Amino acid sequence: MSPPLLKLGAVLSTMAMISNWMSQTLPSLVGLNTTRLSAACAGKLLKGTGDTQISPKEGWQVYSSAQDPDGRCICTVVAPEQNLCSRDAKSRQLRQLLEKVQNMSQSIEVLNLRTQRDFQYVLKMETQMKGLKAKFRQIEDDRKTLMTKHFQELKEKMDELLPLIPVLEQYKTDAKLITQFKEEIRNLSAVLTGIQEEIGVYDYEELYQRVLGLETRLRDCMKKLTCGKLMKITGPITIKTSGSRFGAWMTDPAASEKNNRVWYMDNYYKNNVVREYKSIADFVSGAQSRTYNLPFKWAGTNHVVYNGSLYFNKYQSNIIIKYNFDSGRVLAQRSLEYAGFHNVYPYTWGGFSDIDLMADEIGLWAVYATNQNAGNIVISQLNQDTLEVTKSWDTGYPKRSAGESFMICGTLYVTNSHLTGAKVYYSYSTKTSTYEYTDIPFHNQYFHISMLDYNSRDRALYAWNNGHQVLFNVTLFHIIKTDDEA
Image (cartoon, rainbow, N blue to C red; front, top):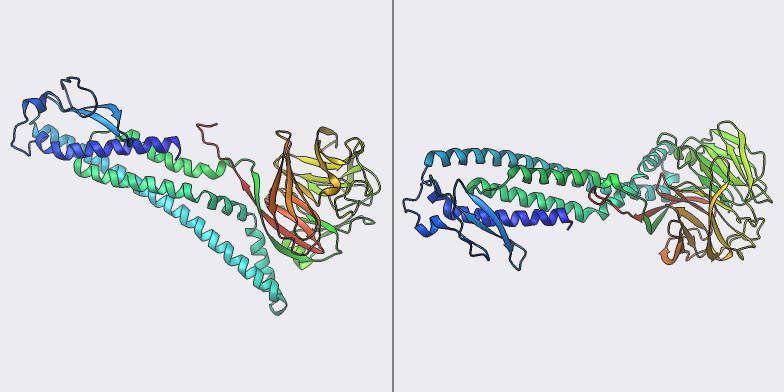
C-alpha cells in the first residue's frame, strides 16, 4: 500500500477509537445520564503511556501520544471542565456535526459509484475484446462461406479496437490497485456512517480532501504511463495472406489518429514499387489507393515509414534513402559509414538484411554491423531530416546470430532465430549502455519471419511471416509516477 493509504489507515484506526470512547461518554456530556462525573473523571481522562496531569479548559481536546504493537494510534482525550451539562449547546453542536457528516457520506457514495462504474467499464471492454477476437477467428476459419460485406465490417471493428489491447492489458495489471481504492472508499463510508450515530471529534474537511485525492489518483493513473520494458508477446493475429515469402508492411507511428494508411513492399530486392492503402480494412479487401515508383530499388525488408517519409536501404550499397510520399521526392540520402551490406552481415535468414531501419517513442534508428567491431550489432540514432548519426552503441552481440530485432523505448530486443521456436533472447538499453539475456517466447505461426518491427502508436509488432501479414501484441511493464515522486 502506498504511503498516502497507510496514513489514511492510521486515521481510520484513530477515528474508531475516538468513536468508541464517545459512545461511552457522550450521554453524560449532553445530559442524557443523571449520574454526576466523578472528580477523577473531570480532572483527567488519560489513555496511553504517559502519566501527565492535564486540566481541561474550554472544550474537548485530543492529543496523539503513541502507537501500540499493532500500529494503532493511542490517544489522550480530555473532556471539558465547564458547562458539562449544557444540553442546549451540545444539541446545537450535535446537529451541526450531523449535517456535515451527512454531506460527507453523500460525497463518498458518489465517489464509490464512480469508481465502480469505471471498473465495470474496464471489465466490459475486456469481455467485448475477447468476444470480437473469437468472432474474428471464426470468420478467418470459415470466411469463404460468409458474405463479403459482413466479413469486412468485422475486420473494420477489429482494426478500430486493436489499439485498445495494450490499454486493457495495463488495466488488468492495475486491477489490484483499483480494488484497493474501492476498499478504502468502502471503509470510509462505513466509518462515517458510524460517526453519524456516535459523533466523534475530527477534522472532517481534511478527511474529505483525502477521499477526493483517491479519485484524482485513480484518474491520473493511466495518464502517467511512461516507456516500459517488454514483458510478453502474444498472438499473432493474421491480417492478410499475400505476396511472396519475404516482404514488409507498415503504418506510420508518428501519424495522427485519423491517418491509418498502410504501405506494402513485396520481396527483398529487385523491386521499387510501394503500394499504399487508406486503412487496414482497405488493405484486407485489396482496395489500393496509390502506387509509388521509387527512384532506387531497395535491399532487404527492414524499411520504416516515419513522419510521412519512407526510409530504406538502397540496393547493393550502405546508403540510406529518405523518400517523402506527399512530394514524391527523395529528401535526403547518406552513406552509413563502414556498415556492411549485400549479405555481409545479415540476419540469420539472409535476404540482404544487413541494415535494419526502425522507429520507436524516441526517434529513428539504424541497426547494422561493421568490420571494425567484428560483425557485432551497432545501434545508431539518426537525425530524421539529415540522416546523420547522432550517437552509436556497440552491443557486442553478433549480427549473424540474430533472427530479427526491434526497438522499444530506446531498448533493442533481439530474437535468436527466424524459424519455429524463436524468442526474444537478448536486449540492449541505449539509456544505460547495458545488456541482458532474456527469455520471451512468441508464436512463429507460419515458420519463417523476414520482417519484425515495433509500432509505438499501435503498441504492436508488425511482422511478415512466410507470406502472411500478422500483428503481435506486446505487454510492457510501465512505471507510474505519482506527483510526490515527480
